[in-house]
Image (cartoon, rainbow, N blue to C red; front, side):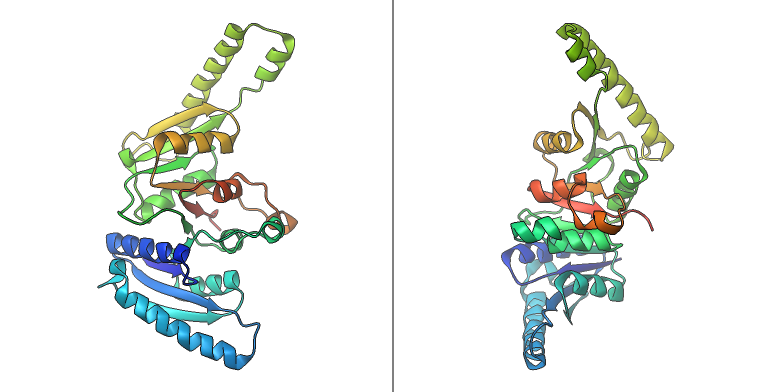
Length: 285
């Protein structure tokens, strides 16, 4: 396995480098540290920044505790940050890209997204966004399941990458009782409405169990299952607060054309709003 850790030498990126080191140590993976130099400047300045970046990366490999003794190498590429990271991931055959949570710029993000979101949208690689402090290996994980192939693929990918599975993996599924709004509008009593929601929860739980069994995900112990009423993001956010996982594993749904340039997916809302490490896994291509 090969892990690519992208760094801009910020504190946020330092967390990503350390987390990548822990994962590489736990899984026996090779590790590449990549830094992207802006090529929209005079060639002599690009060359100068490239040499300095190579020096700093080399120092990090020797100085960061989580990297000591690991088969690691430094790579500096020139270009736009997200494109440079994708080219580096392709050239190294990366199985995982690890990045720090990037500082957001409101207007730019509304139009095109942060660097990490653009890497996730346009690349074929699982991307781990590191938000938290790095003080231990991951022990617990939470994975949203929306009964789709991308959610199955995300769980399988997380397990293959050495993230927690089995009894250390909790699953969250959101359901919305479609008749509830009409029942409220019709003035039915609260007990009747609550009974309908309870029946829908049972139905949703049965569907989830059948889905996991059909996809072979019931063979990894008996994961905790959280089935709650509500919109997907709200249910995921509440489950994160309740379960307190070390990492959230979520699949992305493929989009094309202009849809890629704007926000709206649950994954993008999760990436922007939740202060937790997040593994975003693209659909199988």
